[in-house]
Image (cartoon, rainbow, N blue to C red; front, side, top):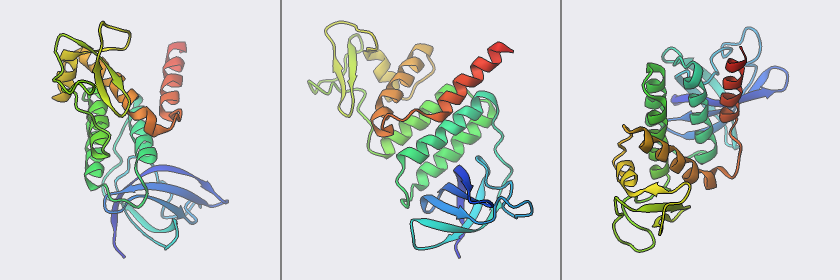
Length: 236
């Protein structure tokens, strides 16, 4: 039975002793598994089926829900704390909601692994997340041309202002409006140059707008947890 490099992205109890586990594998994409007996005190799986633990797993079955046969850690858990932890959970939600099951996304798996490692290393969290979001949008075919006016077909003007139309692209405005994008920012986004704070703000706004149609209006739990955590820290 072939072993698959994997990460757990979501899990929930199933019956008294088992779990339903969603994993992201390098070779087989996203899979839904039943981990029988994994909640028993002496289960070899107990403690392994957690987010951010690099795993080798084996599973079998012909139905949509397959059976986990074996799992072993291939490296220590990637340690995420504070904002980096919420960011890692956010990545898991993107994988869970945006990637089709049973479809290999080996390049996305590698980018996901690298992004988790970067978050753990303490690099700038916002640029790290924006890079992954932009990459994911492009891989899934949802990316846009930041340097082309989608309405006129002409090159974006650095000194003009633009609005983003979902699934179409950027269109020039007669005058600046709330939420508009400066043309010079769009050229920076095209190069993934997120060194300027104002460009980074534009990148975050674009990511949220571009991803929203594919998230189906879902309220992401990671964002709610992050907001709750910030409120809790202020009250201490």
